[in-house]
Length: 141
Image 1 (spheres, rainbow, N blue to C red):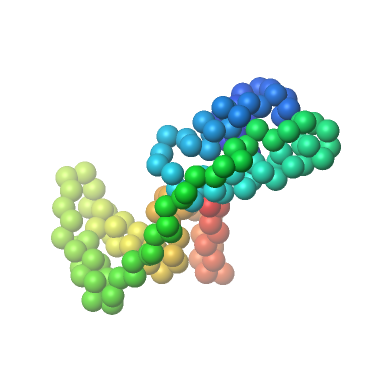
Image 2: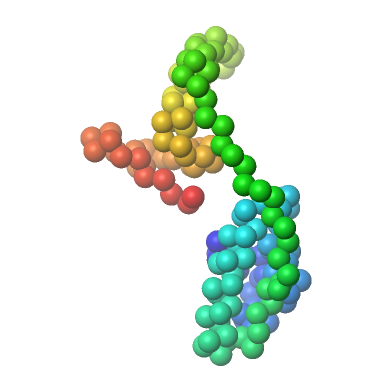
C-alpha cells in the first residue's frame, strides 16, 4: 500500500506531503469503504515513524474520520444454490472457446471452497498452486 501512496504523492520528502494529497489518496476514485480505514491505518503508522525519527514535523492525516459504511455481511449460498450455479455453467455457450463452462465451474468452486475474493483468484498464477502439497498461495490481498 505504501508503494501506491508513494506513486500518488510523487517524488517528495515525507515531511513535504500535504494534507490535500493524503486526502486524495485516501478517497481514491471509489465510494468510501473499509479500504479507506486500512489506508489511514497504514499511513498513520508511517507518519508516526517519520515524526519519531525527525523526518516530518507533523502528520498530514485528517483528524476527523468519516463515518464508514457498515461492513457488508457475506452471503453464503445454500447447497442447492451452489448445485444450480454449477449446473448452469454447463449451459454456457460461447463462440470463442469450448473451455468456458469448465473455467466458470472451476472459478465458482475455487471462490466458494477457499473464500478468496474474485480479484485474488484472478491474480493467481501457476506458481501459486502446488498440486502436490494441495496449497494455494494468495498474494497481494
